[in-house]
Image (cartoon, rainbow, N blue to C red; front, top):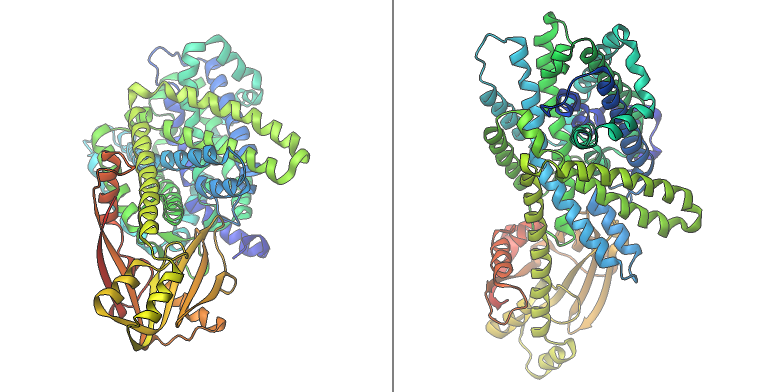
Length: 624
């Protein structure tokens, strides 16, 4: 479904839904970002310093989110899908004959791995930052912050199975109310201290950076927390489309955020002691409890932005052969981009709960937050530059120069976040590198396994000659065999004839080929080629966001002259038992990891939507 062709009313509804899914992460940064900018104990909360911080925040939102992501990167969509892997697939496809292809592929995998690492920290820090408002609302009480945060997180992950569409209908109006509250609080304090508006002058930012070189780097790491939702915004593009996201950002989100940040700055100029929790101290005492409740709801929604993005990137990674088969549920009949991945949902829940218990506060988590997502956001820039160059040539020179300058901003933020390594930044960085290693292990392992299978595959000509020389018993019906490369005869068919001496009257060799585009209509994806002796080869090209379904493929094949009778069709699958081989191209550690990942992958029959009563699995042992 192309959102861009929808009516204005439809775009408005999608923009409202986007408020509840796409902008939650960046929309709750006011809960902790400004306080984190002053977390260095040596910093003095002076008026000049506050204006410098506000100037950095203002220009960061303008340069990184408005110009880079909203104006440029959203145009680097892969037929409506966003995220670093969708972008990488598009870039690699355009660089097919270039030596840079391998480099871009590696960068894309690393960016996806870092985004996964960020997926658990965002829910933890957002919910903790909101629930900690209870300390301001009821300072004398002993409210158990950590258990409440854990309950909220558990509830959040439990509702994911209902799909982002259902979630958006509930969360969108709540987030609209949240942004209105942010704006009202900000306007109230700006009217009391209007001089904060001079912070739009970039000289205040340059003054802070040049006069406080050492502490300014730490402040820049805190400022980055105001733009951390940029990558989630891009990854979630497939859920709603770029037009609703742009409308939501320009008309609602950015104005509300800027007003609130400037309001927090106005409060700090009048009362430097409010740095302990400037967001909640902006509100009058009578509004604290409602604000805590609303902030907690907004924090839950902030987590939704990253969780939805993780689901999208996971689906892409599975389709591109970077992760094992995982169960993916499409939660919307109208929008194919709205999906739910149970395995990733529960993994994120466990990790988020562990972070809440392990770090104990949003300030402590602030040190761990930012480094991984900063790396992912930095990687997106050179990939987008490559795509712009390949699409537009010389006409894109001004745009490429502008994006190159923004790349300097990305590098500055990355260097600033590197100062957080000892404060917890090592955790997302090491987690991201571990995920990167696992993704590369699965990619290399699949390549080694495929090479092994192809070496043992029998050529079609030899197989047909064997059939004529020693024909097996032919039985009625159709047998469907999966063939990885559409080149020879699959092992399952060879073993069935070898051990059972039986062959169906019609045999379909089915091959799936994943292309570097999100979706390919079934009517345009099939190629049917007669092989001989009642054997047909069917090649189905699918997009990386398509859900492969063998039954649907066979039904569509009827229009290509392949008869399909569900009650007379049997599906033969090869179940490989992988055995470690001393002469393998994989290192021992990679080999063990790949074998374990293969054992935990979703069953092939379930992944391809096969009817349980019509499946025959033929086991085989393969050394790898």
